[in-house]
Image 1 (cartoon, rainbow, N blue to C red):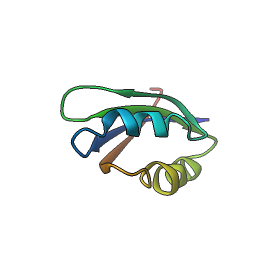
Image 2: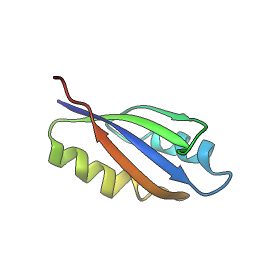
Image 3: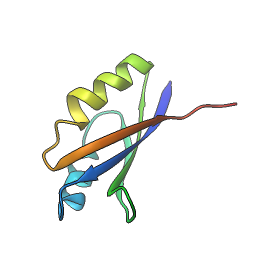
Image 4: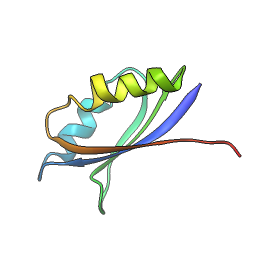
Length: 77
């Protein structure tokens, strides 16, 4: 199992709607609107890194109102 944080920038005024929409995507554990340089932070999981990448590109980045994403895989050192 691979987990990651996805940091999302949105259009002005869209953070809440984006977080609510992304929360419904299979594999998303949590989606929260936040303040700071990013507007939404998502915790997601998938069976493989490739599957996680496909989820980000095919599902998350397709949500209306998103302008940029940064995916940060969780590592266990």
